[in-house]
Image (cartoon, rainbow, N blue to C red; front, top):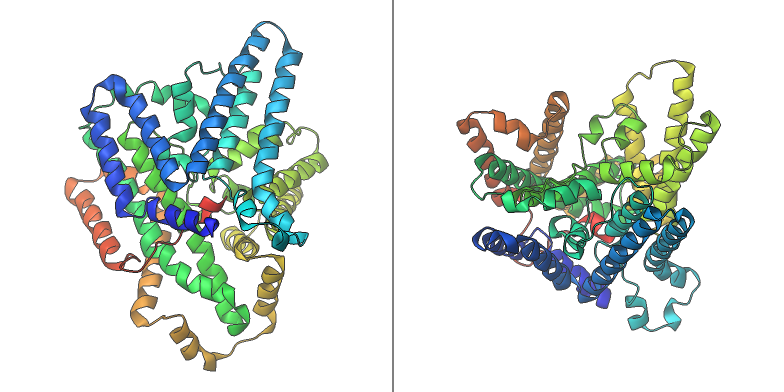
Length: 491
């Protein structure tokens, strides 16, 4: 199937592969070896090459959308400069509606065909044409934010197609974000000619970001994925304890998977002198749901706040309106992640959590055990996010409370999951290391790669070697193995 080919190629090319390291090495060499004036072209060409290698169709969509946004942005600015606010508003609304429609078609058409029973009546080639182009939902959100900022006169339209297209296509963030704002990215992009190769602090920090990202992805997330997949595929084959454990494992897996990708992307960006947005700030250390969303997928949550929650009225029109706006935002967030009802329920749950938090704060009472309660609520919601559909999620939740505990089945389950003593120890230690580092970083208000730059060389190199050894010895890879696809590639 065409879908499978794209997924397999995406898996083989995106970050967790020797190809990517070779590709990155070539791009870095050209970037610093060729004349400075060539750098913007090198980054754009390499980003298009990266996208095209994953899927040529995605490259065509990316170029077309970039060209449209470039022209529309300039036109909106001209309207606003001439005082033609109405024309500018119409242009923004039409462009945003078009992009939202495009996103909905790609995201929901396969599901609509399935729900209506038409899937078997149309050709596979027709269905494959609706496979989501890589990175589409991320750079379309950037496009909407960019046009809105130009209309509101917060930003000037970018006149250079080269710079604007690289803003959308920059390969470290193309696949799964972060959702960058135009000002932060373009200002840095204009200064890449001043970036020197030998900057010990920058390169050391970039290298550490990438190492920590690979550790989270290959040692923790991909190892947990094997167990999580088998538990969620057949929840009734396990007792309640294992179902709870599967939900907890997925809670850690999705964090290490997405945060691991984000750290690798940040490290790659730093090599070229571009600081990408930190998407995670020790989210499971949060004591409230609102605190969790200030730490989880930060670029998305801040985008939803600035371009949806605040325009809806935010918290400026009373508690009831605030709760209503919050529910709208989280339902949109759920729908952005997927077409199934299970994603809507996931967003609905977080909306309910947030409303309960607002009401609770109105009572003036403090919540005891906030971190444990928040973590448990988030982990429960992740079940709906991970399940194939709403029925599967409902069956999983029902099993957690009805199957009961059957210790006699545990040896067989351990064997089925291929969890021998060594594997179990590696999983526990991997989770413990991530949890401990997050706790330390949360306390110091620094990310690990930045934190260790303040240490002596011996301590810094010790961390480097330790992460390298862990990745080479305990990383999940090898002959016949394909790295688990980054979870957020599908969104």
